[in-house]
Length: 70
Image (cartoon, rainbow, N blue to C red; front, side):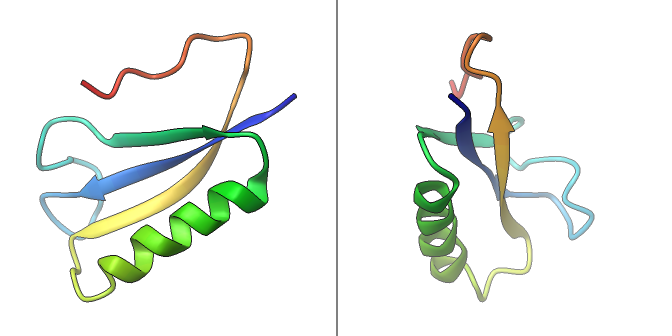
């Protein structure tokens, strides 16, 4: 079974390569793409006016440990 994560947050600039806090935020896992998309949409609309904030959906391998969000 696939897992989905919403990944992102605030970045230093609009190239979206360096997160402000040093690491991206990983939200999830979600058991379906649709569930992840709902969370992505909620977070994207909350930050729609912030040009330095971006979120995306990533598909994860359930056999690997979850990413650290500390």
